[in-house]
Image (cartoon, rainbow, N blue to C red; front, side):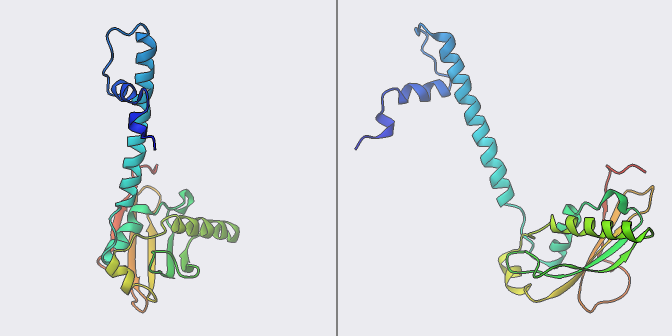
Length: 189
């Protein structure tokens, strides 16, 4: 059985990748080009691996406050949503997906019925882009079957904040004191 590390030229290729050039090489320019190409491949590979590792190490939600923070960080309301409020009714599975379909149970929007329907669909798509929610092992055991309300209050024209509140089914009243307010600096007043 032939080992890859003993293949002819393997040592030279490794030396080229790390910049160890043979000063007596008659083809110094082509050798350097190969070394730069190899170095570029290594850098691209390391960048890709670090991005995958970073995504895999996203902080898992260990509490409902963490789930609320996840939605606050992820949710990008539609541009036409300024001044609207929406409440989703949903339940999560062990893997952080929505069980069934999320329902819009309340939608405060002043506009035509056609625009209301389009904006509701945009809100639903923005909600779905935040899935799956990364759940810790403990949350994955306890969260299935429980129903929650997730409320978004998109600030009116001229303001750059959105209020996000997550509450268990059965709790009523205005936004809880634990609501997260997020500021969207990219919005034009």
